[in-house]
Amino acid sequence: MKKIFILFFISFPFFACSQEKVSLKDKFEDYFLIGATINQEDYQIIDKDEKILKIVSEDFNSVTPENSMKWMHSHPEHSKFTFSNAQKITDFAKENDMYLLGHTLVWHNQVPDYVSKIEDKSKFNLHVKNHIFQLVTRFKGKVDMWDVVNEALNDDGTLRETIFLEMMGDNYIEKAFQYANDTDPNVELAYNDYNLYKPKKRKGAIKIINSLKDKGIRIDAVGIQAHWDLHFPSIEEIEETIVDLAATGIDVMITELDITVIPNPYELAGIAREEFKKFEGDKKWDPYQSGMPDNIQKKLTNRYKEIFELFVKHHDKISRVTFWGTTDKYTWRNENPIRGRTDYPLLFDRDYKKKPAYKALVEMDLSNID
Ligand code: XIL
Image 1 (cartoon, protein in one colour):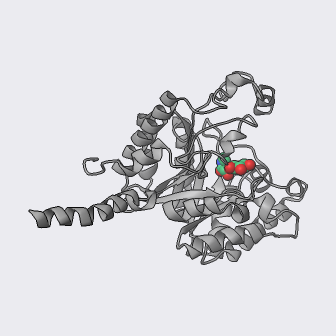
Image 2 (image 1 turned 45 degrees about the horizontal axis):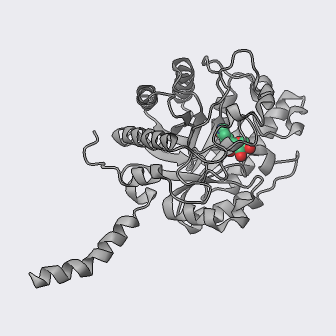
Image 3 (image 1 turned 90 degrees about the vertical axis):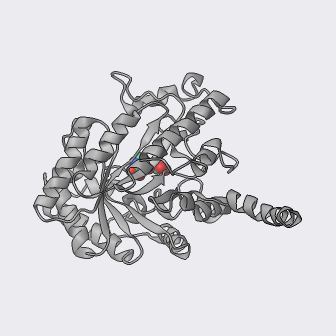
């Protein structure tokens, strides 16, 4: 009896300690990769915020550069490439043995003005080809997967009118995937978009995937961005999205997960995004400036729990779940779609502390999810 008692006291601290040490990446190790982003804009956290890098290395096994590989940062002038920030993130990811995303090669946003001034179609095509060649070559053997094309669809499933569509034609997505594959046949290639829970848009994405496959052009994965809120999309809609996309036979990934808890004017009839500026400073759209109320904290925790239960249930289809950021302090949600707000969409708070949602995830009982 005495022996058992002593044994208990000796082993208790180790037991308690090992319980506490479960990280997100360990918790979901048998199911999917767990990712975060590292940013450079405004906060320069690659160099300046050691605490972020500590969180990323402790809890995550996949990294996406939140901005550094985008066109405006990697290729700011016609014949000038700047890779220093992207390289820092790459070094960090490789030192920590993490899966690295290349985000993103062809996207209508964050493209420098000079691109739209290339008037000749064949020169434009060559320029895009060279952009893809330079980035994919520069990070060959380092980047594990490229988001080759980002956000090519309208919500009704038609192709968004972008400079790429206009200058390269309807098959610009095929060309982009072909150029990426020709440059590095070993790196994985993905299509990434938001609002795929909307049936028409999802149909559009499936059409893109199937048409690439029919033409023998390689696509390995599709990314569901997952900038969601406390209520939408529903768990059923998310499940349908995962199941439908997986039925194409390629990997499904959750690429940009965050759950906004403050109101957003997206669906306001007749208001264009540029007009959201008029809501800046209005407390109606920024209700939790001095802290998140307990009931909202609980809702966020439950929402994350339900979402992860679903992801685990479909882990055979999902290869990676990436959060868009690490802490509420730096989330893009504070600036988008209305600037200067206080949002709480992630698992770490403004003081870098783990939120109840984090704890709920690492303590989830995964044994009876099917
Ligand atoms: C966002 C970044 O988080 C911001 O820092 C930047 O100012 C704008 O872009 N979809 C995407 C991401 O694919 O690249 C976007 O990232 C968010 C929406």
